[in-house]
Length: 146
Image (cartoon, rainbow, N blue to C red):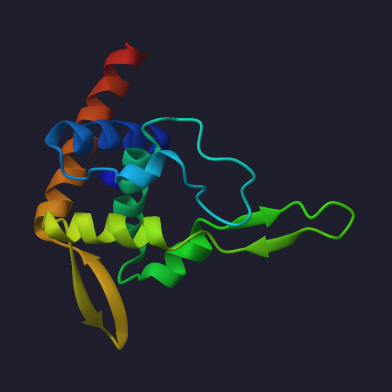
């Protein structure tokens, strides 16, 4: 059900829901930090913390068990090094770690070991939230189509 809806709309709606429920709270330094070495500037969107948290929650649902290092690779990117060839750099890990900790404190994700892989996996409460938001997004899509 969650994978049947537009993922961009799902993440936007999930970010709004996380903000409304006060599940994740950006720290004071979030307004001044870049999301990785490959970025030139800080995020333009003032609610980027909630969007990233929603994206991390969805990623944990789809790819879990997953840890900070794999998320750093997932959110990393190409750095423009001027005359030198571009190179891939992983994203910063601190904001991803804090988001995972906040989601874990809200009992949406938990640490687990599955088939020898250690990382965070989605909890039934997190799965319920994702499916509820996906249902709302699906209903809005059907409403727009008519």
